Length: 129
Image 1: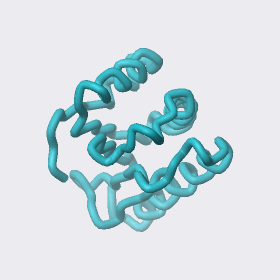
Image 2: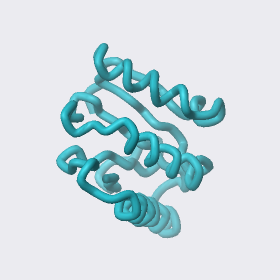
Image 3: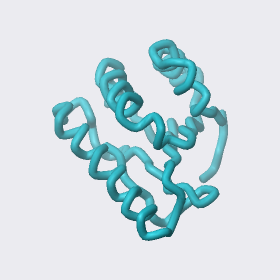
C-alpha cells in the first residue's frame, strides 16, 4: 500500500512511499486501488492548500522490500493502474538501493511500461533518504 509522507517534500513535490510492512499478496486489488486513490487525494489536498506542487514523487526503497512478499503479477496490476490513472501527476519515481536480485524484477517491470513512463523513472543503486 502507498502512504503520503507529509514530513518530506522534494523540490516542493509531495512524496509517496510504499508501506513495506504490508503484504500486498493478501490484499485484494480493489482495496489496493482504493488506498492509492486516497493517498493521491491527500497529496492533492496539500497542493490545494498551496503547500506543495501538484505532481508527486514516488520513492521505492528496495532495501526495505521483503523478497517473500513480492508478487510480480500483483505489482504489474498495481503499476498499470497507477500509470493509467496518474501518469500526468507523477513527477518522478525514484527506485533505489537495489541489488542483482531486484534488478531482474526491475527489468521485468520496465518491459511492460511505455516510453513516457520510463522517462519518469530514475535509478540510484545506493541512496540514503
